[in-house]
Image 1 (spheres, rainbow, N blue to C red):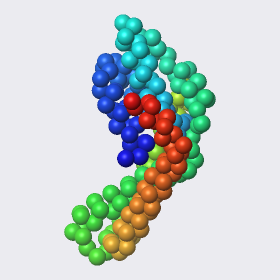
Image 2 (image 1 turned 90 degrees about the vertical axis):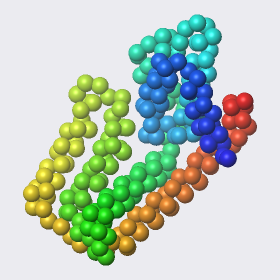
Image 3 (image 1 turned 60 degrees about the vertical axis):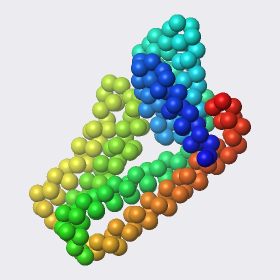
Image 4 (image 1 turned 45 degrees about the horizontal axis):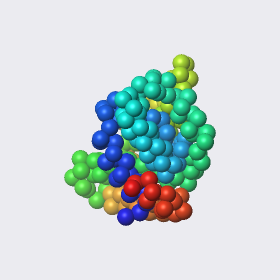
Length: 218
């Protein structure tokens, strides 16, 4: 078992031993420390430190939630500044992996609806719908997660503006036909390669930290 799996397993086990308030707080903090802010390996180390802080607060008769309060965004920003930051390889591989999986799921659904015909008809709007859904959930939401006020709504303005052509495509109801198996093989191959690349990259990020992780999980 590699160091990342060891750390994930140990973190998950200790998170379940925290109070519900501290569990929810750490979960919310880690959501904001997405791959666009901190690489996944550093995020696991930060999560481990937060768990340790929560245990320490518990021994003092208080909690991490009480000590930190609602304004933990400044704390997160400071932690991010002192980390190694995001890994652009991880971002690229993760997004490509998610996009290819989304395409596979859509094609499988369409093929099943058409009884796995050798050729399937796909609606033209898929050329916009899948990338835009991915853009919203995979890229814009993590990027704008810290924004407040008007800036917080910029991601929705972007999506609505881009969705206008999709509405016209929906009314046109145009379709195009593709061979089922080759169309399915391509995104599956991309997913497998990016999954392997992601695992390899994450292993490289943590290759010098075996002893550190072993100390943390003792």
